[in-house]
Each structure stands twice: as C-alpha cells, then as structure tokens.
Amino acid sequence: MTRKDREALEAARSRTMWQVLSDAAALDPDRDALVAADDAGAVTRLTYAQLLERVRDLSAGLASIGVTRGDRIVLWMTNRLEWIVSFFAAARIGAAVVPINTFLKAPEIAYCIRQSGARHLIMLDRFRKLDMPAILAEICPEFAEAQVPGALCSRAMPDLRNVVLFARESTSHRAAFDWTALEAVGREGHGDWLAVADRMAEAVTPQDVFVVKYTSGSTGFPKGVMLQQGGFAANGILHAGRTGMRRDDVYFSMMPLFHAGGSIYGLMSMLPQGGTLVFTEAFSVDLAVRLIVEEAATIFVSVLGKEAVMEAQARGITFPRLRMAPLHNDAARAVMPNVTFAFSPYGLTETYGPCAITGPNDAPAKMLSTGGRPLPGNEIRVVDPETGRDLGPGQTGEAWIRGNTMIGYWNRPEETARAIDAEGWVHSEDLVSIDEDGYVTYRGRIKLMAKVGGENVSLEEVERCLVGHEDVTHCAAVSVADPRKVEVLRVYVVRRPASAVSPEDLHAWLKPRLAHFKLPRDIVFVDDLPRLGSGKLDRIALAAWARAAVAI
Image (tube, rainbow, N blue to C red; front, side, top):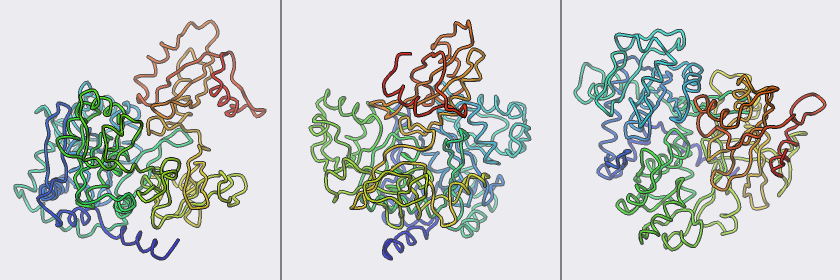
C-alpha cells in the first residue's frame, strides 16, 4: 500500500455521517438530494437543506424517547424518504442502525432484534400485504397488549423498549410512538431536545459503530457485521471517486436500502459528493423507465436493468443522458447510446460493500472480466486456505483483506476472532485470483453459501429449516447456476419411508419460514445422500450432481 493510498483512506474515514451530510449540503443547499417514488408512483423530493433539517429534527425526537449513543435501532421499512431520514438521524446522535430486510419472515426478524440487543424499533405500518405491526405482535405478543409507548417489557424481546411507527395510512398503535410526532419534536421546538441532540452529535466520532448489518454466514446463523461511521462514509467517497461519479450526477436505483446495493452503491455514491439519488419504493420496470427520463438520470445501476431496456425499446424511448450503466446487449446500446462505462466490484458486507472496483480508465477487458483493483487503503492477499501460503498472480486462493473493513461481529467474539487475525486481515472465505496488474477476479466460495440475486444464503440454514418437516429425514442444499439470479438453490431430499409428500408440499411448508430469496428453486427426492467416511455430507459430490443435473 502506498502512503498516498493510506492517507486517502484516513482522510475519508475522518468524518462522521452527520459531518459528511452537512458538508454536502453546504455545496448546494437547494439541489435535490433525494427523489423518491412510492409504490403508487407518487414522487417526493428533498433538497440537501431540507434533508439536513429533517434529520436534525428527528434526531431530537429520538433523543426525547431515550435513544442514546451506542444503542441499536432496528430499521424496518421499505425504500422511503423516512428510511433515509431515520438512518442519518440515528447516526447523528451516535446510535447504530440494524437494517431489516423486508423480505424476511417473522422468525428471522425476531432473531435479528434479539441478537442485536436492540432497545428501539422504527417500522412502517404496512406495505401491500405486509402488515408490520401484526408481524411484531406475532413475535412479541406483549406489543399487542401494551397500552402506552416506551414501556415494552417482553420475554421474547427482553431488550426492546421503544417502537416507533411511521403510518402511511394514518394508522396508529397505542404501544408505538408516532414517527411524524417525533420529527415534530425538533421542528416545533418541544422542550430542549434539539439542543440535547446537538450536544449528542458533538460527542459522536467516526469510530462509532453505525450499522450492524446481518448477513448469513457459513454456520447458518446470521451474524451482525459492525460497520463504523467513518468507514461507511469512506467507502462511498472512495468508490465514487474510483468510478468517476460526480456532483452533477443523477443516480437511479431500485435496490433496497437495507441492502448494500441501496445504502452503499446508491445512497453513499451520491450524498457525500452532493449528487442526487432517485429511487423507488419497490421494483417497477414502468417506474424505472419513467424516472430515468423525467429525472434525466446519468447513472443506472439496479436489478431489472434488462427488463427496463426492453420496455424502453418497445415504447421507442431512449435514455440519452445515461453515461454509466451495464450494456447487456445491442438493445441496451441502442437505448443508452452515450453509456461508456459500467463498474464491476468485488466485496462483501465485512468490507462495507466494494473493497475493489473497476474505473472508467481501465482497459475494456479488465472492466468485463474482473472486479477491479483494491480501493485506496485496502490490501488484498490471495492465500492457500490449507497452508496459509501467499499465492502468485493468476492463482486461486482465499481472499484476505485489510484496510477499510468491519471491526467484528456483534456479540460474537469467537467468530470475530476466526474472521480477523492478529494482523488485521479479514479472512473472507471467498476464492479469488489477482492478476499481474492487481485486478481481482472472484472465483467462488469456500463457505457453504450461495449468492442468490445479490443476497447471501446459507445452505445450512435452508437445510436446518427443511429437515424440521416431519416427512424429511435428511436433506442437502447446493447452489446451481441461474442466468438471472447468478445462483439459486436446489435441495436433495430423503423422505420418510412411505411418505407421499411432494415438492409442492415442501415449498408451501417452507414459504412462511424462509425469506423468498432463500427458497429452493428445485426440490429433488433421492434415496440417499453422498457422504464422506466421517459421515459428513460430501459437498463436492453434491456440486457434481448439480452441475451434471443428474437424474437420480
């Protein structure tokens, strides 16, 4: 690592999230920071000055209900402006956000709340068929019975005290604080809470834990990755600098804010630079086409990119302002004639998302086939996982990463010690190679994980859930290639003798127990599973079955 790269990382890590937002707002207070389209297509805008004011107001409201520095706040919302205001308001007073994937099922949500020790929960009231208060009452029955907010006392959620509800349909709950009323605490100057929040903001440091992001691990139990304020800001600043994102850019994305694709690649690509983020509450091809045109987007990085191009082509629409977007095919080149670059990253949650990424000055072959070079301040080694020996250019081994990385897993000291060695190297359990020019290429995994549409899925978690069915004696999950989602799951199942359970029955049984992205695409019945001499599953043989699509 060069001295220049080290200094670049140190400088980028030296600011809190509130300082980063304040600095960006000072560049052009009247510029749109956020343009949000809800599920009905209604668009709401916030300038940098408005965003700054709303974050400060809500931070006062959070302080008024007892949120203190170091507290964990579960944030359970769809892509809304209120998600982002809550995100920065928590950061302003030094609390740590625990973003909840809105696709998770009740048991998975309960695990994240309990394991994080969260004292506070901010949630939406509903989205389509999703009724958040009803789900919370299912996993925390005391919530349904409580008569006043702020005094929750639950056996199921022993640390949880405050629930804050943002009501999109003018609903309320007697056991929840109203999100809008908390924002009014600062805006209307109730009590002295704005001054209290201001003093709390002065005490926050870039080293404070800002996000506890749950990600599936090789054990099958999600781990809370601890990410600091300075590191979170630094990744946005450095990867935006590498890719050439600018203050005059308009970045369109439909990626969820609870995911790195929304909160790092989208939000933190734009806000530190003073650019504009345009986003949707949910995936919508029609909205994508409309907003890319109406908002004159210059960057388009999201899922459903191919579908948006096909829709635009069918309607005779082009996106001439786009300069950065994936060019999947000739149709994309015709619809986006001025695109010259699409970045390609390598990274993981433990590295704040991208720890390496391509740039517009890279050779086309490098852009298409690699995950780029490490960001300033990051180091990546390729190590033989058996011997710990460093491997040479082009050889495949485990990626060990040091620089802008997590500080550990929340309340998991043993797993933290296994993941981060004494010299600060994070052992990723990813297989990569690095060529003679320093470009990283992802090759696969050591850990028992699948990457389904960008989401980490533990094979063992799926197996453990499915074997709970009374007609399943043994099962084994394996990842298989998929043209759209990169990977999906197939599960080989040994049924109980004389059982007539069908794949459809097992799918229906799994559906309320696992997030939809964890559900297997295929369930294949077999008489037995391949095993090693030790009795453990032979994962190599299973992978061979999947590759060959063996009919068993």
